[in-house]
Image 1 (cartoon, rainbow, N blue to C red):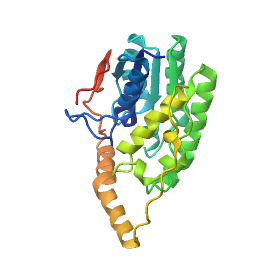
Image 2: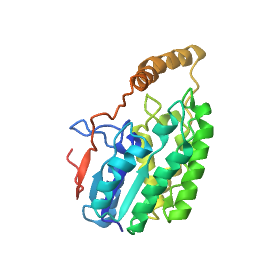
Image 3: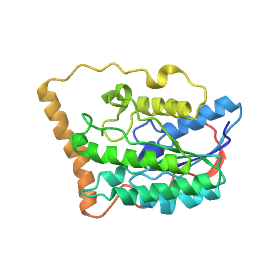
Length: 257
């Protein structure tokens, strides 16, 4: 059983898309995993979440890894790479080097390290099909890194769950509350800890909306989410600028509703 858990990464680990806590901080699968670990241990697990939305792999390596190592955890989860792939150009080898450095640094200290592969966004994002080649290439790199460094590679998210719109928030970039809940259960399964079968139980596809509604939805997505994202890129800005992780100190996990 784990007692000292540090989560590092990007918006997936920060918890965007999930229902927020009363202080408006997003919950997310890592918070939910900390609660599951606490429930199974019968006492609060020590937990820190250093993840920052918008950060690329090199930024996670530079700004989060040192603090994670200094916390002396027995478990670290890593999500990184999607923000690299979303850029107009990406150097997969360079991203792989950053992931390899993080995995090596963590496993060399005897820390159980979980690397999280990227989901196939085909059918979820308008650009999902165009990203698939990059996603597949980076997931192959993650598999190589995990094998080489003795890290755990989480299973690819099942399409029957994470390929369904219900698993994603309205921006289609971040998991919904349902998605975060399922992802936390999937991580328990990855760690070989008790869970139920709900983590990979297929979601029933909803009815296909009429063509007009789909077109309106696409226009709203481009205007409300993609447009601002592109604008930040053109200005050299990121949604994570000026932000720090939501839980910087390794402290006993407790829910304050």
